[in-house]
Length: 190
Image (cartoon, rainbow, N blue to C red; front, side, top):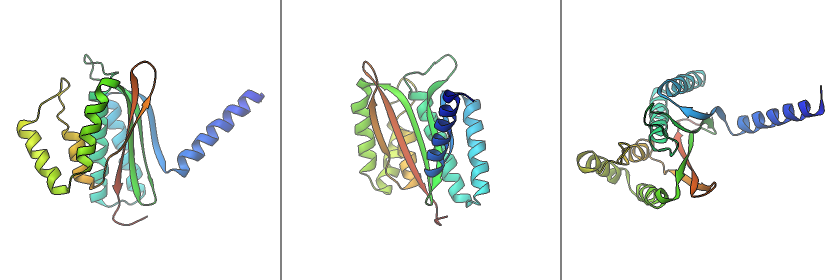
């Protein structure tokens, strides 16, 4: 085996070890279609079954995954309206009794201020305030050109009872990588 092959194997093993250490069981980067979303939710369900996760936790994780994937697919700046496919990164895993769902997609700089304001507002609200905002958005929310009114993010915070953790990482030109991390607590720390 050549030196470059050994280095590649070491890199792969190092990446696998880092993923396992952080509890990541599913990692995907690329195009997201409805078929890929279904595949991921099915794989995550199998992981949760192996972990003997409670039904309520499974429902929350499943719900968060679907909302995050839909949000990423609809609002990625790599979105192709003809086939409903967006591009991004999706990671899910469990560590220390917490399921983490992480998504990342490319967005343009002009969207950052509104998105930051929306998430910061959501993070500052109580569960009751989130429920009121959710109902208000359903009745009178302004839809974006891709069909969103912030409902997915509001619903995620409402269902998990956790703040949304996010970052904007600069890429090139005026593009940024929008990272969103959602925690779903288990009732028992397994």
